[in-house]
Image (tube, rainbow, N blue to C red; front, side, top):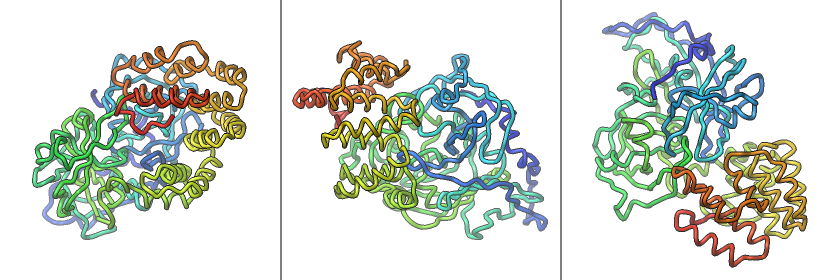
Length: 508
């Protein structure tokens, strides 16, 4: 869809509005060049990929916002809008494409919207209708905000900075922290993402790339990988789950190793870059997305005033390796009190996927995350307590969590299962019936309340073709969970087996 720039949003960075005039062609650096830091925003890491976020407010209420240099404009999530009781109105049939297909765009008006200390007045923003998973953020801060000036991204230091230049030309070096930083020309803006592009080489083939703080891992499109000599049917290329994002569906993901990846004068050998089924559709003509794995290994300046990107390599792995990923970062963040990281570490110790199984370590990290009312940790805690035949304890802790987070539909479903196992099915039905929800996973509640049967629940899950695979897995898991609680383990296993290979690993 066309880029819609909001004049009100531009005013949020009023301190940055005095942009320097375009640099004139010059044969030597300007001696009067000044590169001025105007604003610094601290960054925190959140979500399953520990993506960068900044604090803000929506109508005066605190909001967590994804910092996304891959997003063409600033938007609210549907949960972010509904949790603040913002009225949604039609976006005129407009849609936005993403990893999981497409999503309808709605519109919401608010009295104020702030990003960090930058405040704006009344504002109307688009609202994303559907995403492949429940987002951890309330809004996406996109390039209509981020690229108003020169943007420095230092994820290793968990900070972004806005700069402007005065009396500078194209021969002035703006990478003030490193005189040897690479300077890579911007080659344009993606038609869909309005994001600065750069040229890279993969296996010696020139491709277009963007640097995307909203992508948890770097990826390459299937067509671009093919041009670089790698196809998904090669025996060394392994299927590895899915990518999810905007849109309710999922995109197939493959692990692949490319002999060389080059950007500027930096070359990475045996580069682990995931192949994405939908990347070309999501970003238009973009071939490669350099995500937060790449960005954590570099300090980056989007010098929009010079139409170039400066990069300094900081050390460490440039691309996340399958099976280990960002494990060192997860541990560092968990030890620093990050609830998302504590939950991820607990999950890794429970399932043994990236760490040796250790239930004592898992329980310790899970307790830390639950103490911070982390929703996914609360779900895992409830399931562990039910498996340990302690459902009443799960009920008590879920009730306390729901008092603080009444909008978490998954916690209501876990409460129902725990109450049934604790021998109080009538209370379970009464509490679940009070949940007012019309969107997915509302049909699961209908199944638990006896309003629809399992076949109708699975039909509801498959009602939307784009979202059917993920929802069918989720519905099957909820059906199997109830069957296990009703002492029907064989039937639960039959339910899970009937979901097929796409749902392998789903926990009942």
